[in-house]
Structure formats: C-alpha cells, structure tokens
Length: 252
Length: 209
Image (spheres, each protein chain N blue to C red):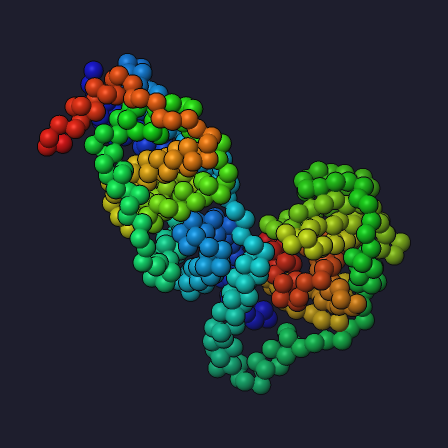
C-alpha cells in the first residue's frame, strides 16, 4: 500500500474540498478501497461539510444595508465632483451651470394618467390572478393577454407576490405586486409606452436614463421606459430608495 | 451631450460586478463580527473601500475574491477585538497527533454528524467560538466555496496554512457541536474507540511525535 492512514487522514479535507488533481484523487481512493476506517472518516467529513452548509443557509443582507450602501456610493460619486470642475475648465462655468441645471432642476410638467392610476392601484389591495414568486412563470401568464412583453422587474430583496390584468386608459396593462423584507409593498404597472405618455413632475437621470418621479398621498411613483415598455413603480419608500430600486431593475 | 457618463459607467459597472456579492459579504461579516450591527458597518465600509479602489481591480479577474480580501482587511484593521478564544483550539492541538479514525469525535460514525439535530443557533454559536482565522477559513471554504488558492489570497497566508486552519478549525467545530449535542441531550455518551483507531493512537502518541 503506497499510502498510510496518517497521510490519508491528513489530506482528507483537501480530497473532500476537491483540491486534488485526478492522480492524487485516485491514490486517495485506492487507499480508501483498502481501508474501511479511512473511507468512513472521509464519508463522515463530507457529511459534516454538507450539513454545515445546509444548516447555515446564507443570510440575506437586510434591505436597509443595501440602501445604506447605495446612499454611500451616491455620496462618494457626488464627492468626486471633479468632473464638473473639469467640464467647467473646458466649456466655461456658465455653460456647465446651465447644463447642470438642465439635468437637476425640478421641472414642472403635466402628469401622465398612469401616475394617478399607479397611486390608486398601490393603495388598493387586490387578489392576484397569477401567483409569484417566479418572474418567468408570471411573465408567461401574461403572454397573449397584453400586447407587449411583460418582464417583471427582478429585485434581490423584493419578492414577487403575483399579478393581474388591469387597464391604463383604454389599454390593457400588467399589474404586479411585490413584498419587501419588512413587509412593505411595491406595486408595478407594466404598460405599453407607445400608447401612454411617460411624464411626471420631477425628472432625474438614473443609469443614464430619464426617470420621472411623482408623489401623492404618501405614495411615491417612478415612471420609466425600459426596452420600449413602460413601468410605473409605486411604493412608500423615500426618493433615494426609490431611485435605487429603479436603478437595480433597469436592463443594460 | 451626456455629462457624467464616465462616472455613470464606472458606477454602473461597479454595481453590476460588486453588488451581487453583498449577501455573501454580509454572511461572512456576520460570522466575523458576530453581531448584526457590526456586520452591516463592516460590509458598508468594505464596499465603499472597494469603490474607491475599483480602478485597481483588474477587469476579468475574480471580483468575489478581491472583495472578500477587502472585507477581511477592513475587519482586521477596524473591527477585530482582542479575543480570548485560544482554549477551543488547545484540544484540537492535542487532537492533531491523534486525530485518527475513531479517536476524533468528528470521524466516528455517521450518527455523530449531529448538526441536523441541533438548532441553527447552536451551530452558529459553535462556529463563533472558533478563533477568528480558523472560523474565517471554514466559512470561506464551506459556505462561500472558495478554493484553497483563493482563501490563501484572501487571508494573505500560504496554502499550507489554509489547510491546517481548515483541518483544525473543522475538527474543533465538530468537537464543539458534538459537545453541544450531548448537552442538549440529542446524543448519547461517547462510544469507545474502534480497534484500528486504538492501534493507530498508540503509534501516534509515541514520544517524539
């Protein structure tokens, strides 16, 4: 026998962890086939490893932590304001100030009917016609019922509870509802952006794209377009959290 | 003209590459700090550091390992407290010479894989009793699926050290869990060691070993 028990047992962990190349594996297995106690030790150690894993399921980071991280990254991005200084050097301060205003100023605009509908929808509790949490299952349920692809936003921390068919104006739309870990609700209307205008009092840029924000009666709504489809996301989250939520749902 | 696009691009890339690992970071931070508040602070600090040093991250290399290394360094520099936790390992040290077959409670018998009879809290508690570098090695290998090479990189130590930390950390944990199971009354008294084990133990405890 080329290997003794002391050696085999010393390297049992590396064997179980898949760290051995095929030749070393084969040598270990030759030893195991001749030595019942070592074989048993390897089996038991593999069970320990699997049991520890099963028992200590990875905790999910709290929603609040995701928000804190998003805000601190926002702060860090803003603090590196050298961009505006560099731009100012190139284009002159007045031009840059004007550009910055155009981006950041609160613009009063007429609101889209979907904004009001989204606020009302969020404040209602309706029964779902299709049950989550599988976004693909929910998406396929809507196929043929509305005339655009329904891709439910995928959020790490919000669970898709389900959806139903509704209307925005004369158009059929997909109504979805999600639950945040703290039990709060996020309502989403997916609608045909070609038929319904997307506008709201406030416009911000999220990941290079315009997102329109409005709020009323304690409900905040974000409207945006992604891959030609319109989304209205309603919740009672703060604006920073809302923007983060939208940012994480936008496609590339 | 799209102002801010390079900053936006950088941020978007960071979000895409790094943020999917926040849950894993948090899980490991919890095992390191042993409390939720410190774990959250640690993860936030580590992610912010990663963002500041993102330009040094080599695109296409292992982002997860890079991030866990930052987490570990941040922990060591800011969060590590003086800990009195050597005693658990003393027994493993004693075990080292004799951890063969039945001698070590963890190897004894499939029935002694007691984790499933214990409450998750007991398992967590036992893991948290392990000294930090052993605990971290076990968490990285068993819960986060890192290879020995990656763990060596994250912990800035040789692979041989990783192996010995894993070996000793796991045996200490198994011993703690077996004891906890006995205290909880879900496991009977230890059986006598088997014959081949006894033979090996005699060999291994000779002077000079």
